[in-house]
Length: 202
Image 1 (spheres, rainbow, N blue to C red):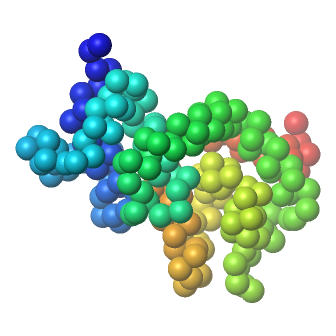
Image 2 (tube, rainbow, N blue to C red; image 1 turned 180 degrees about the vertical axis):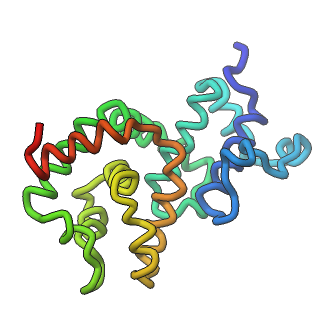
Image 3 (cartoon, helix red, strand yellow; image 1 turned 30 degrees about the horizontal axis):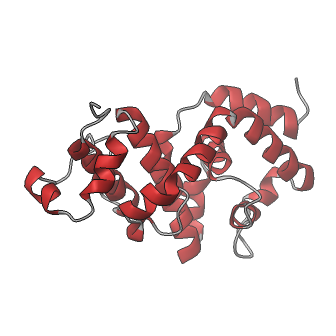
């Protein structure tokens, strides 16, 4: 069977995305996923068969989405190993695809819950420590995707970066900013949904 994507290209995608989610200065899109990986170094890796296995299962786009879905759902992208991704990552990938495909529904459902309990100003207020929005995310009551959409609407991450000197927030802030370029949405459509929830306008 001819591989859907070459094992070495799969390896390069993995390295590029790992750099993207773990290094502040690296941008996967800006550098087109390039890294210092060489074919020679790839063939010396004892775990290269994981990349060979993935190359038979995914095409170019699927490989990128597969890695992104696993990097954004793990506790620490720095320590996420390819063997762990291949063995356990399909579940993360399937759940991620489901969320992306039903993003409008997910956003509406989570927003109705959040703003049914709190006013907009309260949600992003960090005068007493972690804001409600962060607490809800840490409690898994709000998805990373909804958090990201709120940032596209309210630009709250930049504001909290100035006000919160906190390692927990810094980790979440970095993840949101790194994830931004992989979630393309119609911001106007989500603004309209949110306005209907918060204000009640049709």
